[in-house]
Amino acid sequence: MKKIAVLLMGCGGVGRHLLQHIASCRSLHAKMGVQLRVVGVSDSKSLVAPMDVLKEELNDELLSEVCRIKSSGSALSKLGALEKGGYRVFNASELSRETEEIAKLLGKSAGLAVVDCSASMETIEILIKAVDLGCCVVLANKKPLTSTLEHYDKLALHPRFIRHESTVGAGLPVIASLNRIISSGDPVNKIVGSLSGTLGYVMSELEDGKPLSQVVQAAKTLGYTEPDPRDDLSGMDVARKGLILARLLGKRIIMDSIKIESLYPEEMGPGLMSVDDFLHNGIVKLDQNIEERVKRASSNGCVLRYVCVIEGSSVQVGIREVPKDSPLGRLRGSDNIVEIYSRCYKEQPLVIQGAGAGNDTTAAGVLADIIDLQDLFH
Ligand SMILES: NC(=O)C1=CN([C@@H]2O[C@H](COP(=O)(O)OP(=O)(O)OC[C@H]3O[C@@H](n4cnc5c(N)ncnc54)[C@H](OP(=O)(O)O)[C@@H]3O)[C@@H](O)[C@H]2O)C=CC1
Ligand SMILES: N[C@@H](CC=O)C(=O)O
Image (cartoon, rainbow, N blue to C red; front, side):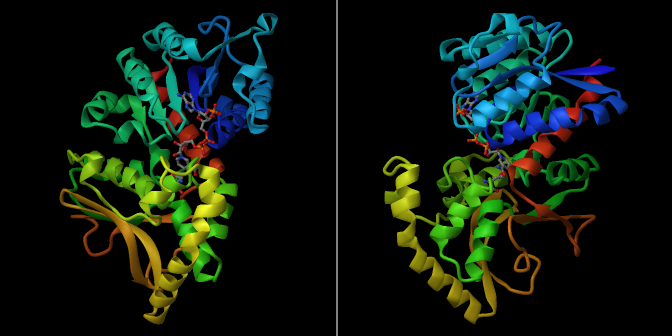
């Protein structure tokens, strides 16, 4: 049986679903000859790990307790250090050092998949160290790959050791499809897509006459939004996905070069308003303007979609009026659509479409990525 050791950073909606999927797929994975050993779970302030990561793992009962504690809104540290329970809890000041320690112990020997299901910039350093120590990395978090080109190059140094399918299109096989096209030498000329589950859902609900403030709240409850929904509404999350795809195509682009259209004004930005204040008081002020835009588009036989276009060395993201009866216009709910134009897919693009957000599908994408690494483990 091949054993894949997994260290999970981030135990929010996606991370918890991943742990649940790992536990519920035990017998399926056993039939495939693979066993996942969870040797660490961290949130923003603590890390829980077995006493001896070389021989032990966090059992499913403990993982279920981790999920219960985190879904109740508590910190992982609530688990307490019950040494006789066979695990240890490290605090915030020990978090990075102990994560690195586990990477050192396992990276070059049995192997380790360091999985980033946080939404943090702070994981970049530890991910780079993990790569240096021979670990594999699996990302749902888009921030590491959309940081500086220097960080990107370090993370993507060994392409066989990195998987990040869920960073674009959640569980949809966008990255895998693009990698196949790239490795066949088929030049990609253009990618057009609706890459945000949140904005797709928001735009199609607005068509049904619902106010923006209400549908954004619903998207958050459904697990589609980023922890701060302004990351979606600013277009930043889509820009990150566009940048990840463009960099995969070999384009040396940085975030500042991307033209991004925001759905809210600067004075409602993160530095100036809390998330709660924005959701309860700020966003209602935007209802009328977007309602008028939706009506204007409708009178032209169109609907609004938040579109990403990658062509040449340019990435642009913003609202477009598209015909109701077009592939983009027919998109409903949190579905994403990605059209890839290349030499082989010239007149008719390769189209990938389906659920593009949600904790379940995103975690499924992460799990498939981990299993895809199995040939690197013994
Ligand atoms: N939901 C979706 O549809 C999709 C999400 N993603 C990506 O998945 C990621 C997770 O999203 P989601 O689960 O909704 O986010 P949540 O906010 O629910 O969870 C984030 C988790 O990360 C933890 N965290 C923060 N900083 C660190 C750190 N330095 N080290 C370890 N853990 C840390 C948080 O800890 P604490 O609990 O202490 O705050 C929290 O447990 C995001 O990057 C998102 O962009 C990608 C595709 C689709
Ligand atoms: N917030 C994102 C989640 C997936 O990346 C989205 O809405 O698409």
